Amino acid sequence: MKTEIETLTKLGLTLNQARVYLALATQNQLSAREISKNAGITRQKVYRIIPQLLNKGLAIKQLTHPATYKATLPKNALHTLLEQRKRENNQLKKTTNYYKNSKNTTAAKQRNKQTHSP
Image (tube, rainbow, N blue to C red; front, side):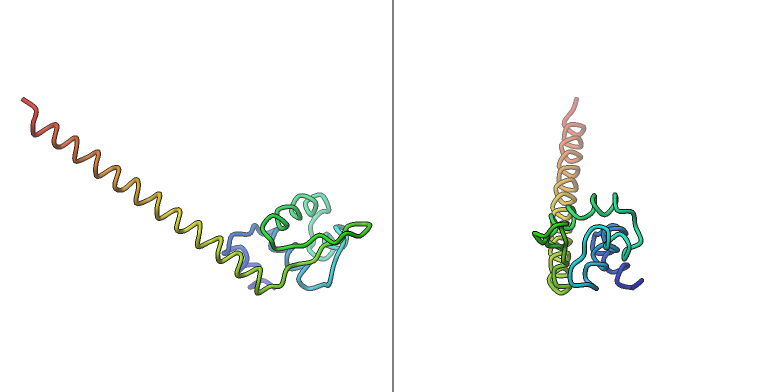
């Protein structure tokens, strides 16, 4: 389970998000209380983490009473996390290139001013 947690954290999940996802992935469906017990984290943290996993598309809420949750299939979850990481990396590249080009342009303008100044 340690390697699974490491993989999920490298793909952008927090340690507790990874623990909750893995608790869900190893069972059919769990209540917040059961997730807390299986993941080894407090129920309050589970209630804070579940919406994050739902928003990332890594968990599904079952309409039961009490509410229960399921993990999305691991292959789908990994695909989702990899795609998110790719988008983040592409955005970082664009931002980096923008600043590199902006800095070069600014430096060139400053050099031009210095060479053309009296």
